[in-house]
Length: 182
Length: 220
Image (cartoon, rainbow over all chains, first blue to last red; front, top):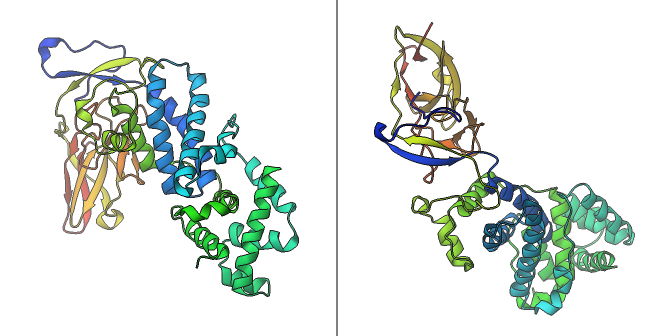
């Protein structure tokens, strides 16, 4: 094998030729940051619902967080800082996409920092929200979002028309949003 | 199409197909309904982890970002994703946790393995090899990953060129990853890192018999 010496063994002498490169060994600080960014990604994904936007926003968080990480903050402070940045980036995302001011987005900016990676708790939360809705609203959201039915399939299942299902879907989503905010 | 139920359904349909959120200023009225929809869709898809390719790009961006404290989005993209990473040195987050460092020699590596008294060992049939997929084989004491391209087969050592660990085939990224430290190699045996270039993997001698058997020069 043409490899260099493993850790603990002699270093190559300068006159042996070849460049000497520094190779970081695990656990690398970058790996720690990436682990935290996994949680940030799940947090953001849960709010934008698609991979492309979640990747863009997570990248923004990472890039913005670099200077703070460089300051030598303890690892325990990294998560708090990353989530503060994530909230700010999400606020900017909605603000730009919808033409809203930051003040109108206070609910996004006030989101709590999750203490750990998201778990089944989120699914439970959704079930609780759905349980608060009327039967028809719950049914349309379950079929459309949890089972992935098309509008046509939902209409057939509910013995209704596509147009009526569209209206019901909008009203059900508005109602679901109110449950969340209470 | 401008009716709110149509707009919201368009957004919902896009999200259900995995597309981006495409919003207009007029959608602000339905922000609550839209955010409720994004959360329901995220729930349906379960807890999301970063795609391995994205994670790798993010890692490269973190490690090669320039030292300017605040970056524009475009600058971050150029720095992280377009990158000429070789120009940047040093661990980005070095002060968070000083990494222990070891020295490796920057040599080309990649020479063929010619065991003394070696012999050709039958390791597989051509039909066992799938284009674009690495196959781990052993020829006596010689471990290798084989790669088929049409009628030809190439092979590289299954041992990392730096730490003496068995590589594994990461099919998702089409790379050989080392389990002992964060480095990867292409099927040609070249290190993927421009920041910490390692010697190339040693190659193994491979031949295909007229009967369609694949043989590697190994040991008894």
